[in-house]
Image 1 (spheres, rainbow, N blue to C red):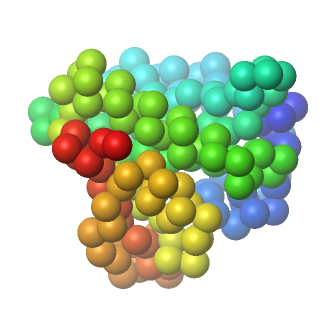
Image 2 (spheres, rainbow, N blue to C red):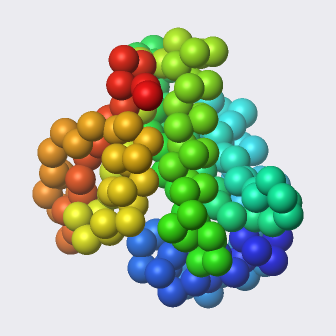
Length: 156
């Protein structure tokens, strides 16, 4: 839990997410034990913790949200620990989840939104094979969002 808390409280993470500005271990525990489980049980999405193989240390979280089971479409989001940024963990995890969604559950679309100013997140999308579709103006408050999608035929 300390690594999740440190990631969520990180200045760059705070800039890019809607997490509480005073993020504590209590927030992390509540999210891990209550909120993410309720989200999964309702069918709205699921959250994973990504850990480094060699050390078992938390390096990222990836979540599916706004899941539309009838259309077999969902959206992916992620946050990477400050000590793990730029090492490919988020992209590898997103691609693995996409393969699982498309292969095992018959999903047809995985969407990803990244702030226009968040070039690192856009690189994650591109490295995972997502196709840039356009820009949603004021997609997150006052910030424009680049919309990416991945469909089964896009998988590398």
